[in-house]
Image (tube, rainbow, N blue to C red; front, side, top):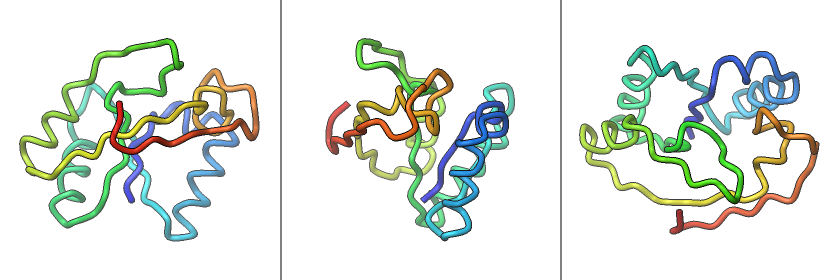
Length: 119
């Protein structure tokens, strides 16, 4: 699994940086720092998809609160058009409260729900 992340949050937030390093060490994922000003990370994701790897990406560019509807960033469509891989939509609720996943998160272990085929 490939996890694109916001570089600033994934480095500055102790819980996030430790959690992401743990995922990599356990062999559960590979972290790709994203930068909206450069296409290097998107090309890394493209190569990963073409190699048959799975990519977990928030198409809005960040974790939204439950009451927010954010527009999708162009990178998700760009990846899908270039690789032709199927997109499996999913929705996370509660991740906006997590100190691990969200910049404004306050809880160490919030209840997080994953719904597949929605969003």
